[in-house]
Image (cartoon, rainbow, N blue to C red; front, side):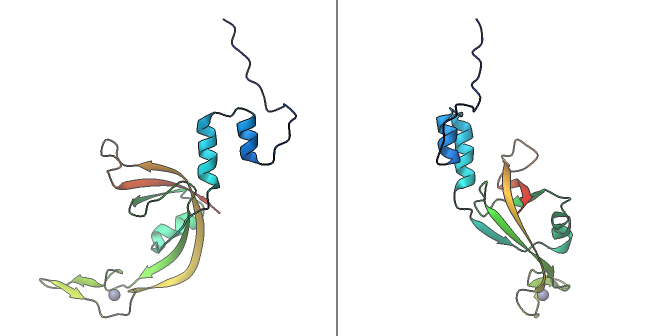
Length: 147
Ligand SMILES: [Zn+2]
């Protein structure tokens, strides 16, 4: 049986939007679904990575991040990364290990300083952990692109 040739996007019709064009030209449902996911109002998260994690992303060398999935990350969401240099005494935790117990750190909240360096990125892919892969459940790998 001869395979039917796929019709290219050359019907000459005019569309009011990219979505209408995708539907009108018979794009697969999966493509339309991806388009819808990217088109919804991007939710913006704010994170405070430490310099060793912030630097490579800002420099464009690292286009992914491995994180606990505790913020309902979605494809298309934006993340504002604000570089944060944690307090040297407590590492930003607010406490440190004393001789035999946790000692409260008495420096000012938030136990460190924002350096003023920022970087806006968008999530373009998410690999969710599920315990069967290298990434364990409740963790994820975010594919990132700079905005
Ligand atoms: Zn501190």
